[in-house]
Amino acid sequence: MAAKHTEALLQGEQYTSIDSQSSTIATTADEIEETRTGKYVTLVVCASAVGGFMFGYDTACISSILIFLDKGSLDLSDRQKEIVTGITSVGSFFGSIGASILTDHLGRKNVITICCVIFTLAAIELGLAQSVTALVIGRLIVGLAVGAASMVVPVYISEVAPSKRRGRLLVLNSVTTTGGQLFANIIALIVSQMHHNWRIMFLLSGIPSVLFLCVAKFLPESPRFLILQNEKLQAQEALSNLYPNATFEQVSRKASSIEDDIKLNEEQHRLPLHAKLFGSSATLRALAVGCGLMFYQQASSFNSFMYYGATIFKAVGVGNPLVISILISGTNFAFTFVALRYIDEIGRRKMLLRTLWIMAFALFVAGVAFSRIDLPQELQTKNMNPASYVLVTSVLVFVASYASALGTVPWSSVEFLPLEARAAGSAAIAATGWLTNAIVSATYLSLVGATSLSATSVIFSIVCALGWLAVFKWYPEVNRLSLEEIRKVFENGIDIHYVDHRTSL
Image (tube, rainbow, N blue to C red; front, side, top):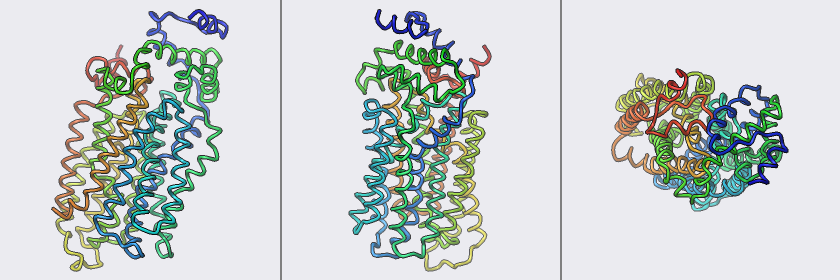
């Protein structure tokens, strides 16, 4: 202890006793946030968000690939389509869990790098696949990489982003996801008339991961992870890069405030994994909110439109399915910028409450429209009737509302979690999403077959309405709070208006 005290004094830092550390955290954590950050932060976030692009590209490309396979040598049944589609979510479930262990041992940046290596190899395997079995194996491997990235990237971004820009920078990960979806659908339209079009789409999916590997060595590790590893000098260097206009004293105090938070919760850091997540009622509440919102994100049926949109619109004869897929992914991409622009200004909670009810209404209208055109394919005409236009419009409204909040906010739920449980909690949140995704994607076509497109849309409309009620009752606002201060939101129940109380003091 004395050696650490002496080292701190030699570095010009103010070493406080544990009894006074809680006030130190409150007064020092925000000081560096007032300095101007450089473009380096945004570059770091954009580079790390390649995981989002991989997820987005994979989500959208399979929709077009399923159509291409129908015309190629690998003609798949509906059940095989569900397996090839859903197996990625199964892999993502296990990938997100496995990554939580690696993240706390190897570091956030290193795990993202491993994900990119795996994704690149999987893209090559899928591009050369000669059987349905090979497709399933390749899609499973892709899922492992995408799931791991979906867990670690939000952790990394939340730990390097300034508090006042954290929401916006976390949304950048969603921007790259929706950008990947749009890119995949545009590529599908371009290669639709080429031989081996589905192979081309799979091979192109490896390019983003290769680009990340080229710049990985220039990215810093998370300062919070470095301090957990007792690498304080490296953490200060990383903070200096992230806050180029901060003074040495400000950087030192920021590093000390993170270290103080770790010391205050030292016992929790030493706990086994299950105890970190479930040993504290506050952490358990934060985890429940994060997992619950992620469940509603995937249970809203959005990804069903991404996975099966082209198949659905082809079946009901509504326009060119590839063009409509571009409209859907383009709307999703465009309205993600609404979240990017307003999430730190309006707040996460208000954004969700203002859009979830629109999603529910739009899906209900889509259900009514499907009932007017949900006919056997042989009875369809090539001309779109009024119900077809209502259907496309309602789906686009649903997608726009989704992209504005529910498509982005759940991935920022990692900020609810204390440092000692952040990696494991992020894995639990991501795993909840992937498990729900796997169930929905693996049963969607079967549900449609057992009922109808109309009834299926109404069912998911009800799910969205229930999501609105859950957010209204349990989702707290944490806008502009430091990661260390967010602990207080869950200390005594769930204080959904903590930010307002804090502002009024």
